[in-house]
Length: 195
Image 1 (cartoon, rainbow, N blue to C red):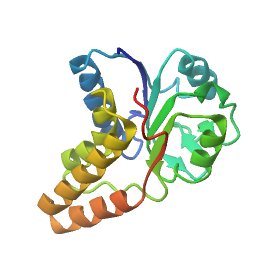
Image 2 (tube, rainbow, N blue to C red):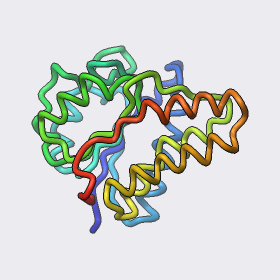
Image 3 (cartoon, one colour):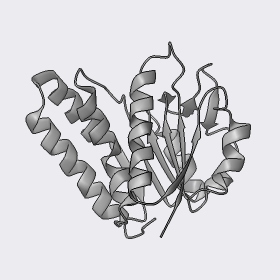
C-alpha cells in the first residue's frame, strides 16, 4: 500500500542540530522514494500548528525531526507547533514518529488519548554523538521498517536491534549515547498494525 508521509523538520541555519534534523529527513525522503510512498516536506517558517494540523488529515504518517520537551515539539522560534495544548484530534489513526527529546512523556500520553495508531519518540534527551550517520541510522530504523510494510512490533524489534548493533560497533562515547537513546525509546501503539 502506498502511504502519504508528512516530513516536518527544523533545518533553520543556526538552530542546534539543524543539519542532523535535515539529514534524518533526507534519509526518510529517500526511503519513501525507494518504497513508493509519497511524501510532503514542511520546514521553517511553516513549522506552526496552523500549517501542520490541516496537513496531517491527508497523511498516514507524521515524521518530525525537531527539538522537543515533555509537552511538545518546538520550531525555530521556540514556539510549540505540536503540544499537549494544541488541537491534536487530526492525529487519530495516524503514526506520529518524533526524532525529538522528551516527547515520549506528556505529549505521548496526549497523543495516545487522541487515538494515534502509533507513537514513537524518546522520554529523555536524545543525544547525538560524533559519528552522526550511526545516529541517523538508529533513529530512522523504526520508520524505515514501517515503510517497508512491517508490523509495528517488528519495526520496534528492528529498531532495538539496530541500536544494539550500532552500540557494538560505535566508539566508546557514541556507544554510551546510543545506549542512552535506546533505553529512552518510546514505541507505543497497536504493535500488530501496519501502515
